[in-house]
Image (cartoon, rainbow, N blue to C red):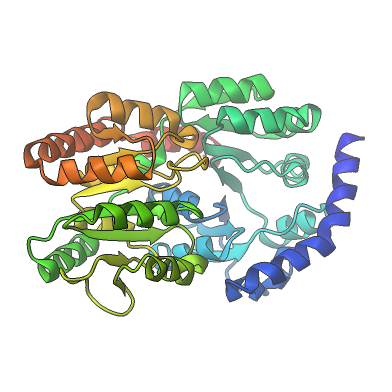
Length: 414
């Protein structure tokens, strides 16, 4: 009965879903592309090899899947890989780093759409990255005996409270999964409390992601264009944060380059306008190399975050100044960039706590505190070196999640 009500609600929401795509397309036109896929309309298959399906909703999940996909390709070369997404940015990221996988949108979670999706692709194995619980999709896989795993699963206390409001529906969906592979024991405990039974802890796949050497070369090229000018990076910033950062930066007027890389590409123009309103000079990555005489360099590119971190002397992790729960800080640790973290870190609570504890990160209270502490770090080479070493050691110590995950899912493929 609960799932029937959920299915009815999903059907009633379809008109709004179409309106939502249109509204999003006003800022990001790609939302109007491939709409048929969202209703399980796909091209005729030309490749009949057995298929492994991985769902990565957006950019972060796609990046996390990179090492797992590489391992699957190496051990199962006779299989093809389907990668599904929900956002254009996730799909665009996959086209850059995983261009030999088939990329599609996952259909909306209506009974008929998920049946058509599974009938069309017939996956031997499904892997859902992090925490995407679609009850009809999970139920259809269980009925068709398609093993479906929740992989690299994370669940904050806030998200757990949200899922708990739909306790019976959530519990049924979790029970119908073949298994859950959680990032941390805290994630595993929250998932078990919601009803998941087969839960293993394998660590975070993002620790295993290695930056392509070409991005290191790119960072060195950027660095050579600004000489000895210090660089403070604000990485993956979210709406509302840039205005606070730019105002604080203007008031302090540091003798450094401020690089800002917004999380969502549809906001690039907005952030450039915010910079102009503060009276700060701005260059865009897409238009020119950074120069020492500019105040703000806007990173309006996709798939180059590792280069931005390598380019920077210090980095604020976006999504942590306001109540967004922080973006991924692991990539910064891996390249040895000293980290500044705002007060909101619930999406990466354990990694954030460990980075702060080992000295790879410093906590900041707000945008003004960020500028004060960033400038202090830029003037303290010895402390930056110590934080860089701590970050690299922290990232190295937590690698290995890909191999542990593969050992579990191989039992299904065998």
